[in-house]
Length: 72
Image (cartoon, rainbow, N blue to C red):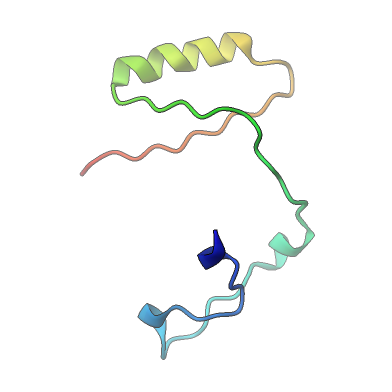
């Protein structure tokens, strides 16, 4: 998205504080484009089933990412 492309812009919420700088490690990382599918799960039992399914189908060296957000 366009709002993420401003690398050197400061956020209005943190003006007056030290600006956030990009990590030195990020400069050497290659661009990664995800072309797979995304599955949303809303129940713990779904997560368990899907995790088991993924682990049995995952090829050697395959990568899986999880983004877990739970209400407080």
